[in-house]
Length: 203
Image (cartoon, rainbow, N blue to C red):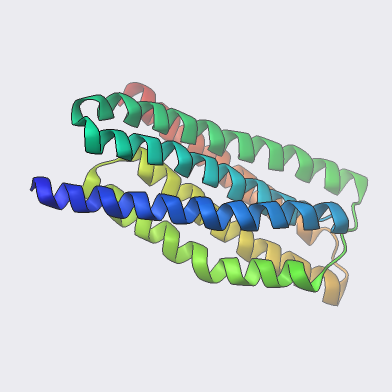
């Protein structure tokens, strides 16, 4: 049993390190493109990726600590879970506010080929990564890793909606699709963050 958990911890660390590398690069690129193109959906995707990266960094600390000191790991589990809840709510509120502003202001984002490519590639990688985290989280009984898996899947949904918004905007001229899809993800993240936060506080 101890060996099985040790193997799961190693897998969790590998997933976290991969998330840091992938989402760090993709998130930064998405934010740079969002400034150039004025795309809220792309900015939301980039911010979500970077916050998922930061959550994975906290989990690296938590899982490495368990490898050395299993007793202290429970305290770090709760701290990591708190950070991930905060990340969910931060992304949800920010994207929601910016989405409303873009709809009211009639923002007209441009569509770039690189932005479309970035979202499309992420749509291949992130769903696999998110479900893998959820699988390992259930076997480790780690709510923090589960929350991080949800953040990764949220980034995958944002990649899908960003890709859809960019394509629809470029082909049909539906500028409102960009902030509208961002609002949908913002609502989902805020609700999930609040739900996990309540469970964390009273569970």
